[in-house]
Length: 461
Image (cartoon, rainbow, N blue to C red):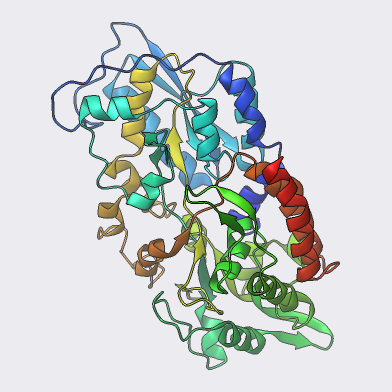
């Protein structure tokens, strides 16, 4: 399979956009009346069973399956919750990542939205959730239970708030990192790049030098590449951020107003990526990657460096042929680094018939214990501060040795653009034009100009 983050997110966003979901969800049942506030301690998913008045309730819990680790953990959550609450059956419905968008859209359109599901704010912007009344508003439940949200990273929690209202709880808070084949670096006598995100010495030029020294040929045939270009949205956008540019300009409220990729620094970063494949020849072209698989190229020792998300660490832990580790991203013209990310959340559809029970399960799967479960299978970068700082997460025995860099990188996350039409702009304009960059058909300047010309029209339409 290819680099996991690249495949699932890209296929997801290429599918029919969730913006079309707004109309169908707005037609679903209105949110239930807010529960009255009451006194009491902080709720815990492991406290007393949830009362259902004797009725047997079934909660449909729908998630995309990124890998076996995710599915196993979620199966266990559903089982444990039902064992504690016999009258609440959690029906976990794992869906292949490439089919997830269509599945969610179909459920909502049919008037049977999932009671709880994994919400991707980069696919359905939070402003759309708020305007279309898509999710169960959680603030009344938080107030009723005096539920403590202070352990979540403020920036993670902010992803799911709009106009002071909370529409989901954070699952993780991911980002992009450089994964390294240490054996290949050692073989060439090369020092691994820094894992310290405050270190400004690791530059684009330094990175290119490493990639060139790691690239090997036999005649005209490349047998080893220095780097794999992850063409996923957040990975390539990270190069733009690290070169002192942005993807969009935004207003004071944080809403995107126009494409900003025509900034010379953005164009330079995009051209740098294309040149890695076509000018310098240090990265496999898309056709080779498609044939052999991105992660497989790295795991087989044919690629020295690649960018990926920490949620794929459990894949890298299967590698036994060589030592690997992680490092920060190279820095261009920016003063400080930026990494595309933000993670995903847990949400309940506004039309759920069982808001109280859905809330209890939301607490269960976003608890400290639940995040530690995902840490145990290498499937997350936790959104809870206590878990990021825990000995379980920072344990280096399974790799990577520089796992503390995952926690540090959370300080450098750049949020995805926020606009009701961003998914449409991305799907119709950004993806199609970026494909011409990856194929070598158009230069970065031509691609940036096209994205701006087409995208700005949609922003103001």
